[in-house]
Length: 107
Image (cartoon, rainbow, N blue to C red; front, side, top):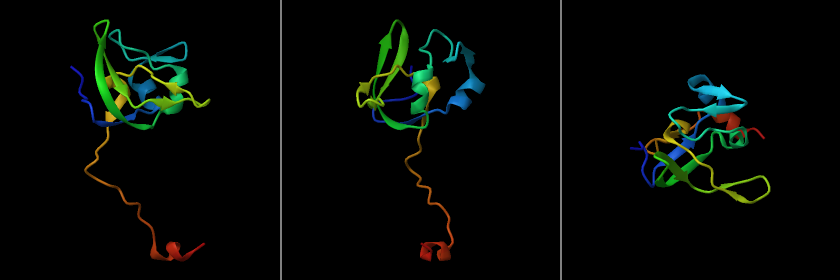
């Protein structure tokens, strides 16, 4: 059962984080257990924050469907993601960057 549910806000993990955590073959990342691979063309979406739309089971594997992602040519892409490629975004906290008052006055 997926750790995510429709409506959850998730971030696509960083490439280097997944390379360290999982196996890499021919330039793509194998997260294991017959799950979809994180492929090189998906790399440009690392760090993207999305909303989970639904969870599908395809060939016995749970696929996490997220908001459609826009390709470089403006077309819409529906990539296959799984739990291992995503992390939950904590929407209860908002980080406010620290800055000095004087820096607000500078142009």
